Image (cartoon, rainbow, N blue to C red; front, side, top):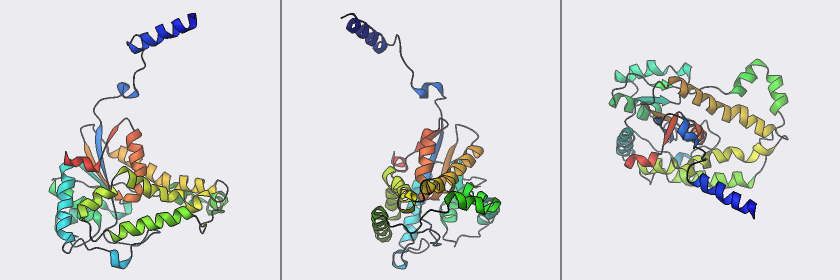
Length: 279
């Protein structure tokens, strides 16, 4: 009986704030740097990803009707009012040199989304810089330093392993590929940049070879794909100077799920949903 009374008194004092745990957000600044991640397909279809678009499904953003649809997409993204733009480019791509050339009229006929979205929006917004924040992964560094050691870590991964979930994923990507032409480009990007679509892209890496070689499939994913995105996030932190900034990040959509996770967990950033630009 006494235990029940004590519990009721304690619960009552907790409810009325006499003993209360504060949410973690109370310990950090209220203003956070806003980040909009725009996951994209590669407009020039370089064919570097494992799942490639069929030729009959490819679009040309420099020709109608996609040219006008691209205008709508750019107009929509500019509602975010970015103060900085970061793109999927490594140091050897010479982002700033290319941006200076773009401002002088070059590269306008290049279909690459880094030009058609990143640099185009940067120039429209009067920004003086575009930041390339892509990078190599730890697995690349390990391979250069000691390929034998890397093989000892992940050499038993079965890259040909059959997995029904890989088959399901292929059907999903085939569907989205076929919808590229008939769906308006802005609507297509809204579809691509939902939480579900972001996670579906990352989920592909959790099928097939992931479960092979004992724990080696998981190790390889960690030092390759997850690590690369963690490094990208680190470079984003390095270019962030103020909580007043609004940073637009344009990357291949496969990166978006991990970047979303890191941004949502970080006390420094506010992840902006693509669909919320309507507001």
